[in-house]
Length: 197
Image (cartoon, rainbow, N blue to C red; front, side, top):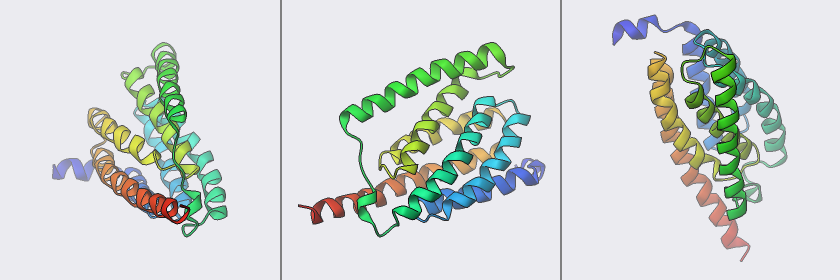
């Protein structure tokens, strides 16, 4: 285990630390999570390219764009603005799940036919879930955390398979933070709902 820790690149350490801080601050509704996201995802673009997780690499490019958008949006809806947190309707949930399914098939098929990925559909599935969760987070929609809990758990064995042990551990931490984020955001959401009654 110590040997494996010593073999982890400085870039993965940097990506992991900034990624952890980013998700922690997001759970606290702190808009400084977005610049940390930019640092983390920029590092992971390089890492994922090197290990042929192309879906994840493209996802990091998407995260760069959503970080800029999220930072702007969250500045318009600060933490103490409880109206900023919203929830999905049943129809929106169905749309989100259908989007994940369709995107998984499209991304997985593309990766299977046009890249040398050894896990095209798993990469496609995790990438698709992450696309939807990240979009929901930028809009402060509470269910983003439930999707993140699920996809973070899915990422752990994928990163172990790719020998990114530190990143796998990070995603275990992300799972815990995402669950806590869901609980905290739900409390804020319910508080606002009670005030509006």
